[in-house]
Image 1: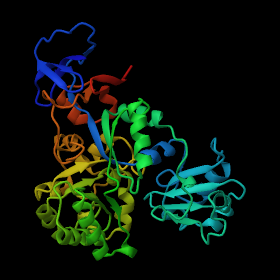
Image 2 (image 1 turned 180 degrees about the horizontal axis):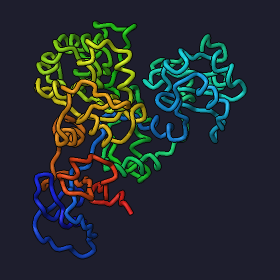
Image 3 (image 1 turned 120 degrees about the horizontal axis):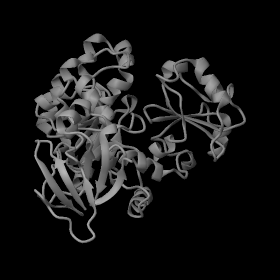
Image 4 (image 1 turned 135 degrees about the vertical axis):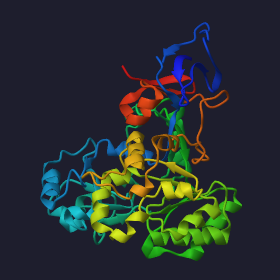
Length: 434
């Protein structure tokens, strides 16, 4: 296809011929026979956004799940009312996501049975690492004698029926491409070959349009109560011996410190990643730079959960939360992502959070970590294998583009998904705003 009168981020107005890759850029290009033409009208054209850390099956499942956490649900009474009145889905389950203990404490089967007894209820913690089931649900997944119904996602002893069901990848695809995203990296740990193949097949047959990549089997989630530096070092060394980089989930200072030590002991790979880096003490900035590891982080959690951080985290530690600018200043490669569905799936929201770091109440959390709008945008333009290296619109680059309605100055000032006019993947128009 040919895109006419596109404005690049540097202000250049040009035409772009794009197929599997960008074939030609220049003035007054003529459309060939049978070639579709898209008139950008001076709007900005950028590489398609890449969301570097998502969970596709969970995100598709969340489309028909109830949200039971802050800010929408904040009290036990609200949670009870929602579950009591909830209509089960087509599979007969009540499924909910986004729960946090601030709503009604630590839920277990007894607490859920008191609200809903005869319909299977499954609630996922907002971290994605914990599931809470009532007795009816435990019976459905083959665990009727489970003591409390609190199941860690890392514990594979319980039935895969809890997570594996038909999900609407087509609707998820539509929502993702409407934000200008042309590729995603699935960060779900322990995806097996069948999981990966099924998602690749969904992409090839057009059910899921963004290009999918996967961190598994090189992704590991750490838990503070089970930190084992020697085991982590051995796992990293084994992954590297098979020419695989690693991606380690670090949401606490302890997890980050142990990971840094393990990477030093095992040796680093140029494509190694730290996922989240929710807490980064000052002393660890230089450690990350020395290792050459890329940090993939989510400043959107400041916009979504910032008030809770301000209330729960000691003030002296606020400067360590969801760093961006200080990582860049320390020469650490950084990319942004949404962590969908555990974070809001709109990358433009994450960009604005990186620029302004405003909490839901309007407070600013750690203003020293603010970055420019241009930098926030380019951190969603990274290559799938090198998230910290931004792609550009130039000949030979993949034919994956996002067309905005506004010129660069306005686009950068607003950073809003509503500006996405069209999304192009491999030279094919996959989203067009009517």
